Length: 262
Image (cartoon, rainbow, N blue to C red; front, side):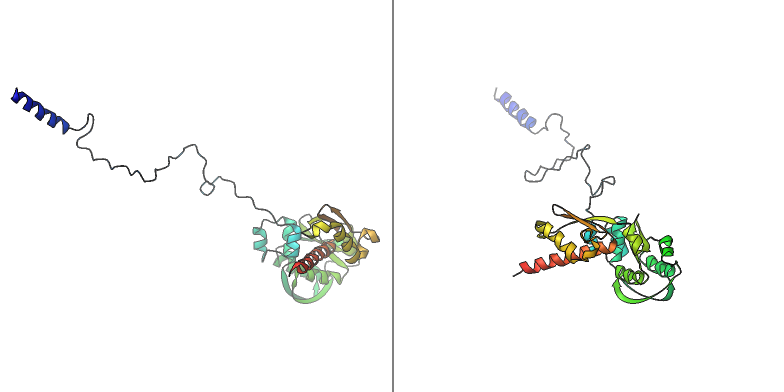
């Protein structure tokens, strides 16, 4: 009996040294799982792709600068910058009109001078020959102007003003026409008044039509119109009227800002 018990102990000890059922005794032992390690995330094959890696993801939406912002202080330092801002054709032209130019023309045909300027700023333009003919002018009318480091719109105002002409932004192009014809092609634009001007919108409107070339506004029998819709100023007039409006708003805003500074 003693021998039988010893044999049983030997068998039991041998069985304890055997691997578990189904386990490969020659397999590489598994690394113990780190209880503090970060589990690997399971990738969802149906999950959405990130915008950075998805070539079909829609690009982020960017707000477009307002016409007033382009007129007051253009963010574009070049025509390439202006296009990269996502400007509309009208806003692009307005931004380019704010760019500096240095140019001299001596007895240069109007059409030739315009071509030089418009090619420099990559701007589409049209000469209203019928309006020029009514003034006794033609595209080859000689003009002379010599200006350094002035804004393009100031250059055009001086050059065209000498022959009783101006420009209008219509149909995504700069139209060169007579002053009289320009009043027949008013441009409608709206300007959101900044704080605190928006709280005094009616007073702002009254100050505008009584101090900024009053003869141009309908209240004095002129062709330009202005109205207030809450804090938005709506203006219909020529490009020169709009330039005056933007300058007026900018100066008024600056004055209010100075008055609130300690």
